[in-house]
Length: 99
Image (tube, rainbow, N blue to C red):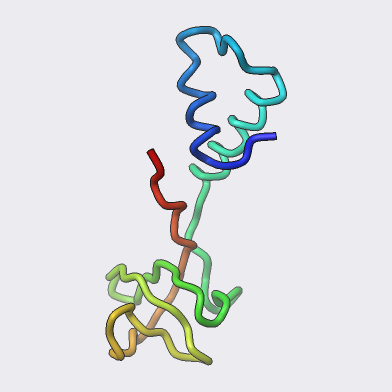
């Protein structure tokens, strides 16, 4: 079983060597991880707000995008106590890059 996105990328990068050294199961799992990452979509805050305190990417009514978190029914930009008004959607942060 692949442990993370980094491993999935490693497997998919082996395409030019016909996936030498990887099992069919590892290749299939890598494709599933890549598909999930590519299909990340905005989530309506009305339908499903993010968990309280979780850092996420927000989009407001004007299309501005910021990183922040929710506290009760309010949204705040990280590093600031300024409230983000009229938040319409959010998405999880991507995994951190590891070399």
